[in-house]
Image (cartoon, rainbow, N blue to C red; front, side, top):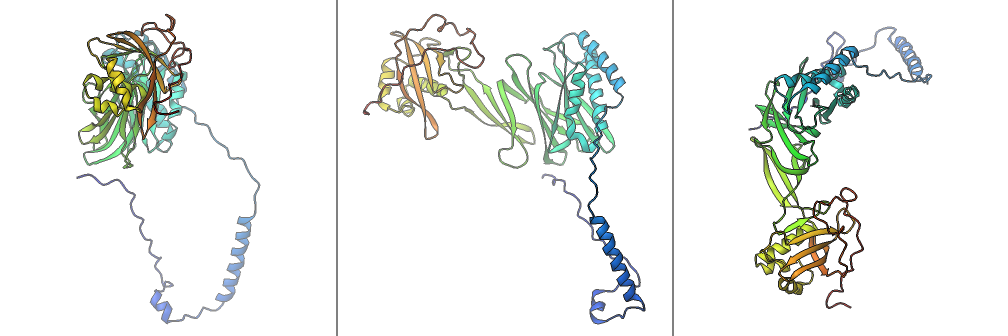
Length: 442
């Protein structure tokens, strides 16, 4: 049984003022009351005064510029003192943990955020991002998140500005009547946080707060933490956290998305996945991506669906894997020309006697390439293939492959650890040969 969503109280009807002059509708319809002596002249005088007052009100007045008073942070001197002490303590912290004496530095920054947010007031918390800019200007490292649908809840993530491997602390702020409360929780990464709040409908846990954050390492592992608000709004309970039901296995991106429009967001993650052991690839080459969707239940966010994000690279790895399994019928459905499956079988594309028999060397110089070049360490020797792909009826298929005539220089065929010239873009190569004319076509 879920709790009803909070709704505003209905407006009460205001009864007419009592008195001897109030007349019920039925009496007014059946009885005519003559006006008292002099009432007609009084009414004319009242109408003239009302007309004069209306003309004065509607008369155009001189325009005056609206004076906007800037928000001035309270007790700026004490904020500077707290910031100085926090920076000294951050430098003195030992290890990556946030407990024990290490917590005092985070707590000082959290108290700074509480003072600044409280000065904004309950109705102005949508401007909470300004608090983050003020604290950052004092040499600290914070990130302030506020949900525009529920601005009464704010989160500020505090990081150690001098130690990138240290854990972070997320401070939650909310009003409980006139008490502006504050609660902290450890975050393993704390980088690029994203926070959403929604009404759950559970009477004992009326609100959920989901937080996505990333590691500050180059890999950027994604993590998720789920909070639930206690019914009396005294505190937030941690329902899921990394290594305890909130693990997103891999680096990548994640977002809160209301897929079914019920005002309760789902978590969608796009995570880098390990490929088949038959394949290896350069660092700047495409990789396999798993798309994971999580939906909420009383026990928290549960995995609802996981699939491989369709792409040319994913299609080719699936094709080779199907050949290795002997599933020729399924492999044929991934080809524009089904007859070419015989050519792939003859070249032993699916042979699994050697690990990393396929090396993805580079592809079209686009962020989402439509052709890729592979080096195949086959039983008959090494052979390169330029494989072309096309989108047919909403799915990727292999349209053609050719054997290039160029051999490529050593710099172009370095090990997989070779650094690309530009992050996310394959190193420049000579243009790939155009696909051969499909069989049966002029």
